[in-house]
Length: 385
Image (cartoon, rainbow, N blue to C red; front, side, top):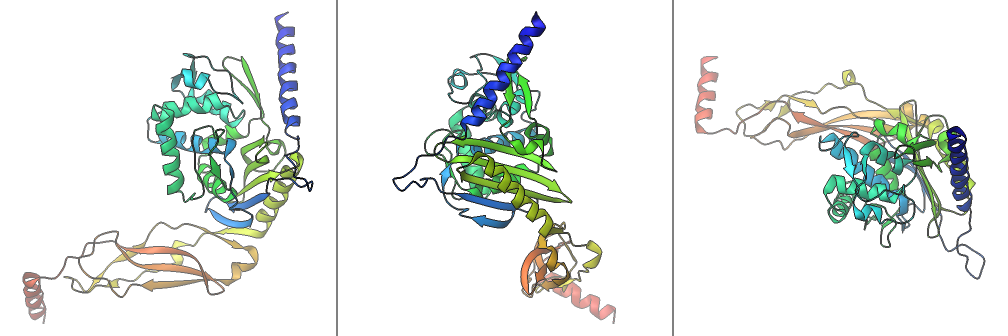
């Protein structure tokens, strides 16, 4: 009997989930001319480097809605990285989390649940109560967490984004496709989130709540790593998708799509183009020889130097043969010089256009010349002839 009840419960859960998926196809409010009042926007970005590849109305403002939960997850992962929390941390649900409306996992006030399950609830189910529970776990309260969200957005250069709560569902939270892509790019560095983002169905709360993802791309797209699909009347069908192939990370953000299925088709097309047309170019350390750099007014006339850690940059496949390197040494280096001071740079150009630069830094300290050091230098030169 228990088996049939459990089986029946699962069937009902799946049917309800697909009801909401189909409900996403409800058309947006139309004007007298028959056209939707919601703009359309899409962006394609290479996530490893944060390089914007294509954009159509990428800076048009939209309600943040569920995309704000990506910032909630980012702040959580950074807190975990600092050792303040872990996925095994147990959180006690507040009355505020319990009071959330919309998508939720029906947390009870005082209920204990792990961060692991809350992450599942956000990545698979867009749960608002789970987002508030995480916010309170990270910052103690929602207001402080929201301030942290906006501070981090500013640090990432998301200058068109404002958050008013961790869920993104309250009026006043705004963002753009470009800003969301920047956020997704930062979040894509956390490989431990991929299993959460690519889960189609799961349960939380000891099986009391079943979750079904609305991101159909996780079922079929090669290299998919996440992230989120959602619908609202104010931004229509939206998709934030990320995938990895051959060292590249493609992130596609689509906002304001009237057709639920078209967002997935478009994302596949755009990401396929990105993977086919671009390459991640990583310079070789052995190709870069750095000479000592001249220093004015120092106890030594020059300072030993080296490049900072090598990174990568994106080029079109057709541009690979056009990549050139140029080494520039600063001619105004004045003592004192400290280890790590910038004394030049290595520039990579494509058709004479700068695409990427690496700093050349001092690897030793050079003190400023004074009377005593000048005398010693003179005596040394006299003795050595």
